[in-house]
Length: 229
Image (cartoon, rainbow, N blue to C red; front, side):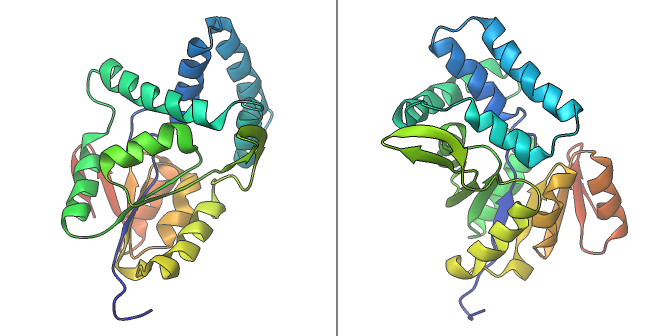
């Protein structure tokens, strides 16, 4: 690591920075834009829930979600994502962002640390969030696009251990010192990302993350408006 390396702030998005699961909220919104009845969304979500109940791995469920978007225009999805973001702001009475995490991330930006979002979601809902919060980069699931349309396949789902690998690969390219960096996550699947940095923060009350935060030196918890060490 060169002497110019700096710390950064990495953050999961769904239920860490924002109150909702962006992929599913966006899909519901997009289907409405297409004129689909509510039953269409419920049917598709029922299929994904059924796979989860049968024990399908999270990365396979992630892949299954993007197969639902096969043949959709990438540019149309991006435009719909901007409309979705505006609609979410209007519908969330308490605001779209979880205030404690938003405050922490904005403090990192003020201190000169780049903000990097890390998510299993994709460009349509993530790009407007990144622009609004001032993120320098987004490490996310990348749908395969051919001739302007989604094929329904993805390169690698940004789920579980892939998050940690992505953070470790991105750091030297961006001149980031991981030992001097923070990461925020709300679920056990964020563990690999949190373990990659010097200052991991468990958001919320996930039992697995809470156990790490209370038993591992250097970990913190962000919950109920308090950072607990």
